[in-house]
Image (cartoon, rainbow, N blue to C red):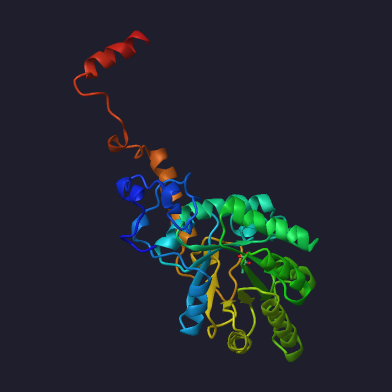
Length: 328
Ligand code: KIV
């Protein structure tokens, strides 16, 4: 939907942004934001991208930009910045929930965070990440959990980890009419069997596994593939070989787009920073310094100042003071 083609009711209540009506005539936008507070500059953001836009971007050699987000503010910042896509990764386990890894993350965690992200980024293609345990047991389980991402959290697509070993899962979810993104190379949910958070495909034997996984993901009906922590030579080969878009996280530049984890790239996640991350800001330092200044201000009486206070109605000051005296 272009600007100027906004449903009439939205025009009328623009200041309130009653998102429920964004369903419009063609039902394309959904009514996911009826609970949402106003998203800044809502009317000026670009049209939400869909699968075909992503395919065209690949054809035209246009790089897709992608970041993770787990909550309302981060999602709204990503949308305001013009990000093409948002992943609500199960990395939320580490970045937001403080777990050591992704394994404890539940479907309930994911759905709740996906909903918050959707409220913050109503016009961005958002993908939910299937947590460990949500697709390992059976195809039927995988489909049921994938459906939850769409029905309960209004996601545009889901992502799951693995290639050859999850072929039937990808096929089953795709056959249910859900966009599936594969994720191969370093797959954090199986970092145990992989021997830790280690780059993959560094030698020919390991690279063959990555290639077989990539082929399996495409054959099974995935609409896109994310490749993590493999050499750029391999990523470039896969981006040329596959017809679906191939995106990189820590897998070099020559492909169809890039993903970074928000907590890493803005310096919010303190435990470690992978080699492949470019750090664009030091938010942890900014926030800690702000908190320290606040503590100091409270201790020294600089906060709150008169400008932060509500004042007794003008002309009522004396009466007010007398009333308080009554209670002394
Ligand atoms: O959960 C996540 O953020 C991910 C990335 C590591 C790709 O899956």
